Image 1 (cartoon, rainbow, N blue to C red):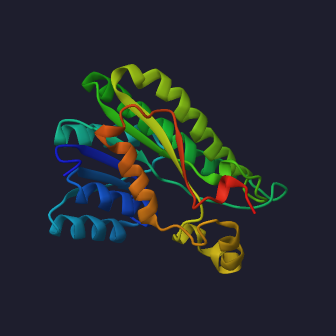
Image 2: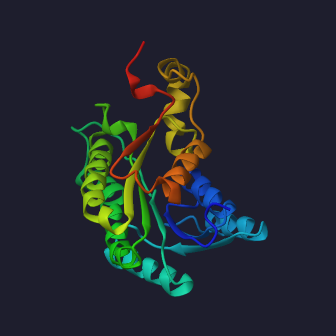
Length: 250
């Protein structure tokens, strides 16, 4: 299997895109640890289902906004399995509202969860991966970084920051065989997009050349591609997985 002998850590892994990523990596042979914030029942279900199917999966509760928590989780993974090969920063939230109404708490929660967490976990993993001279870091962005959507100043800023951060870190780690890339999903069928889909799903599909919404598995496929050994010459890139939404055609 493609990830046999590899270890992986996924943040936000108990549902949606994160769950699909955990499943894909585990099914291809990786030992997978994932972080969840508060969905203990969902996290336990994911770990149990994949373990019963023959995978090696463990869950850690942690606040990804905390640098100390990130350091602790990464240390536990390395203590348990001896190394960390693949890091997927998937944890994210939305707190959409117009700027005139946006509170400081709504701004900080989105920036800290979506962007600061990426710094926290990447920094914790940097020295172990550099020392091992191997690593794959994949950070979750969004096509929202390209669009000026009303009510998403905090979300778009966080994802634009992820992309800039990814490119800078890629230049620092490339010589140590550690790649750093981002995946930018379009409209994906998850709980996070449910409100938007309920309000305008038909209109959204009209704007997508593929004429369908994406599935979490579409994103997991892209992550698995970037996490593979064969993609060692791809770094500092943002892979848009959006059915052609950002092409700008009519």
